[in-house]
Amino acid sequence: MQRRLGFKTQLIGSSQVKCKRGGDLRAIPRWPPESSQSRPGVASSTFRKMATGSLNEAVNGVISQLPLWGWVVLAVVTFLTIQIYNSVHLSSKLPPSPGAFPIVGSFPLMGAKDGEPGHQMFHRLSQKFGPLLYLRMGNKHTIIVSDANMAKIVLKDQDHIFASRPWMSAGKYMGMEFQSVVFAPSGPYYKKLRKIYTIELLSNKRVLASHAIREARLVGTVRSFYEDMEKGQATNLSSTLKILSLNSLMSMIFGVTDESVMQMVGKVPMEDVKDVVRCSVELGGEFNFGDFIPIVRWLDLQGVTKRMKALTERMRVMSAAILEAHREQAKLKGSSGLSAEPTILDVVLSLQGEDALTDEGLAGVIFDMIIAGSDTTAVSSDWTIAELLRKPHLLKKLRDELDSVVGKDRLVRESDLPNLPYLQCVIKESLRLHPPAPLGIPHCSTQKTVVAGYEIPANTTTLINLYTINRDPKNWTNPLEFTPERFENLNTSIFGQDYSLLPFSSGRRGCSGMLLGYTMVQLTVATLCHCFEFATQGVKESEIDVVTERAGLVSMRAHDIFVRVTPRLPSHLYK
Ligand code: HEM
Image 1 (cartoon, rainbow, N blue to C red):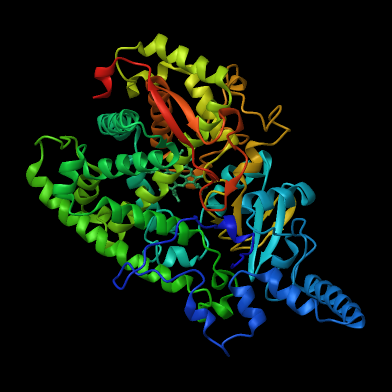
Image 2 (cartoon, helix red, strand yellow):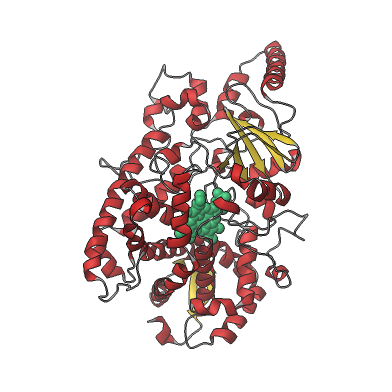
């Protein structure tokens, strides 16, 4: 079995699901790629092992053959190398650091554990080195920000300096040559794109106007739970939530609310879209040595770049098909199953003059929205329902609120959400304890600066550990407990104005879909808890695991939940 550097796990990380393979554009080479294994002479076996993620194995292989004197020499040489290297390269004015080796930097000193998500590893390091930690990742200056005060400096006071993105192969390929808003470095292009997102695509007005699409998608999900019940089957709650959020976002992009119409005008099989999202989350999360050690980039030892190029080609083909389908759809506008509201595609295609986007830019918008928006919202709903199932008294309190505000003769609507204060406490608490993107997306500084008295070089990759910040015992009593009541008397903003609670990050790079994401999670949790009683299958409610996470870009619970449902509302509402 191939082991991987624990670190890769999160910075970046990988989903457990493998991408589809085949002989066409969708062919994604296997992890680890056969090509890198059958390349003798390109790199020594030790280096190859490192490159394929098995650093510990490689080091252990060398060490187990050393005699005692060899150990002593190795220890002395290592010590001196670190001292000399660090005295030359790591100024004493940098933030506290475990130190670094030449070429590979701090990697061997980070204490990565196999399969450990990166945010948890950085969390451990921050307990030792403090809330501003310096690492040299290969040749990249990197800082890890782990408390509210430091976050405020980086995301507010010096936001103009830290709001760029570092060079990443994911941005070059999957970000369509850095033309997607997620990966674009700061500058006029990013500014233009961000304005389009804020004003045109994800504004409050646009989110409110598209409520019918999300409500209709949830009705479909409620029906699918009910049908499984009628067939006597359990439903995989976790995967159903993923399908729901992807379908909702696709519907918002197309404006289509009905599956059959979607297939008719879409000509884009949803299975393919789902597979591209899965592969993007997997590849976006791969630890690519070439990103950190440029001298080995051209070798593409892990085959990550090759797989990214293949995936990008699939994205291009798919976005061309989506645009073609959109033209067909325009002819059917207003017919059953099609929203009369302008869709996201209507809006981006209507941009004129300076704001008009290239084909690459359009593909970037389509995939930014579905990749950044779908898993994040799905896992948030999943964590929330898992926590509620473990604590039936909290679930009852939420249902009492829903029954009294919504009643029992209709489903929840988005217009009900402002009248459900306990629901808001529940969702805030879930996003606090389980931020779905625990390290956000790496930022990058554009100039040399000083943070809390430490020198930060220009071009420093900056990771904000939202996971650590949201659990900081300085700001939260019993921070590991799921206690929605803590928000009942607190007016803490979830949207980035309060630096002790940052699920969406903050500042000019803060999540552009925060209102949409927050709304989707609230509506999903409220609707499912209002409609059904759940009985878990295979594990008792009180034993649902809300600690173990899969390594990955998005923080997912390690085990899917299967539930059998019992309706709580009159039967006509489910048909
Ligand atoms: C519960 C749901 C969500 C959470 C917790 C979340 C969280 C985040 C976080 C932490 C970031 C990184 C911010 C940074 O770099 O400092 C981010 C970026 C982003 N998110 Fe979300 N997100 C969610 C839903 C969505 C949705 C629904 C969309 C759109 C459909 C979306 C679109 C984006 C985009 C475009 C960016 C990049 C912004 C930029 O670089 O300017 N997100 N999100």
